[in-house]
Image 1 (cartoon, one colour):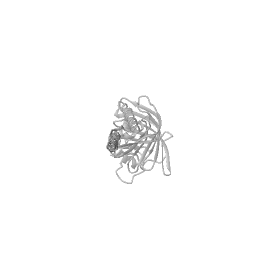
Image 2 (cartoon, helix red, strand yellow):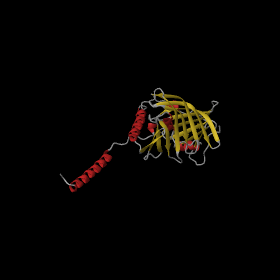
Image 3 (tube, one colour):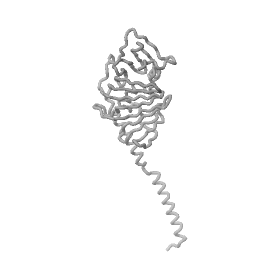
Image 4 (cartoon, rainbow, N blue to C red):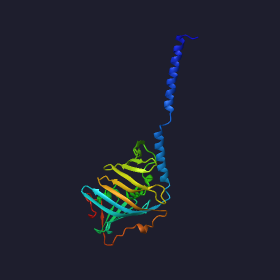
Length: 276
């Protein structure tokens, strides 16, 4: 029978072996359930977005209200076109009068303002719209994707990190120059989108609803906080996906022959839309 002097080294050896095994278990342990759930939620989001691909065109209508400082107003809109461009946005007053007609094709932005009988042009949609007093963090095509629930066109396939929040998971993006984060609920539906620009901006998605022909649910109410400090609330009343693109003639602006043409390249031309 071994004596105490012999048993002591064995006990030390067993203790060291137990510590080594526990270290190996910690290293090879599977990721925590929260990380698995975060991956599954983002995968569900990407899968729903992938089913939107066959849709080539769209038609949206509703109302939008905006506020900036002491100014506020309300317009009705019809937003339609091809997801691959061109895109057209018609704005009318609550009484039905024409307010502005916007068009984007490629990177070129054109706006016809009937109240001034002028066509405004710019090579960049975001800069041109800002010069007209509409500071948007998106091009018109990107805005169409956001309103139509096609966030897969903006959000990257991979995220840098995920954090569990009250209404789902917040996914941070490190390699995207414009997007900061996307928050999804536990079913993979978008709740918030934030980004970088002159100032941080944010979009909140509310009142989701399934739409025939659309794989992903569409938010019936979107609240956009723009880089210029304005708040834009879009209410979506009608959503009509199209399998076939619009003919080019349907997306041309109704510009009279005598309308003036004015480039928006000069600095200090903000707020050229008529007052509501």
